[in-house]
Image (cartoon, rainbow, N blue to C red):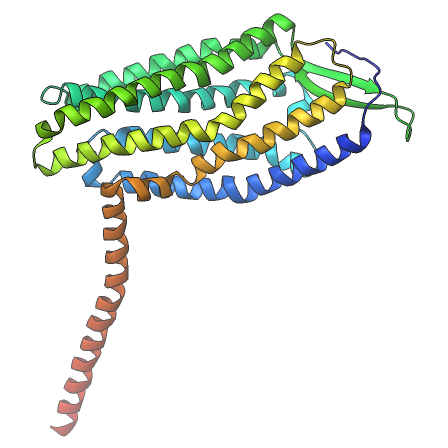
Length: 349
């Protein structure tokens, strides 16, 4: 299914937007994504330590980092060819469909996992003496699985997408053309409604309300936590969730603007310069996505800044690694000294 139209386009802008987009994607792929994969792997390893196993912190943040890694691997697969002026996405209709389906599923899973984390902390504060992670691990896993299945179903409109082509006259050549993923107006409308509602609006409202209630409940119930070490860790987890949730929402805001603009463009047949608009929207998407990509990549630093338990574990690991080398060196030196003294004694005898 192909659609062809002939329009007068701003080819200078299209060229500039394409080069700028490729430059941004290049730095995203080779800096943010590769660094993000490494840092998220490190974060997963740290959250496997015994300290975190006593709380839901390890359970949720391990999944969160795993989602970030999947996003980066998926984007690297399709992004690296873009830096070389090639597009795997536009090779076939199914490439277009699977790219959008998988990416939107991962994005929305990340948003709803943050909702689940906030809800978990609210339940912990309200039902402090009853809510036990050990008794609810299977239930939590089942709830997350059900959410994932719902996200799969809501992203099914992506399977109605196809490659469309726009042909335009140019003063430099006889004709130019560009391809992009699109669908019928009905499928586009449903897809964008779900994208805005499921990834942004509903999770945003839920996280905002839950965290505001959480702040109030924490102030009212702080005495219930007592002085036990485990309670202190759970309490720290509450504040970490509140702060990182608001940071997550802020970093995603620029992309919300892109979704609104993209929906307006796709459903407004009166817009003329389709290739120019496509170039602008692609540049806007790439630039606006950099904020939440940075959050996904550098999440470990937010944990270091706002999660005192995580920070303590990192300091403990670094201290151990720094001390073990001098200690081993000292032991080795002592051993060498003993051997030297023994040899000297044997020589004298």
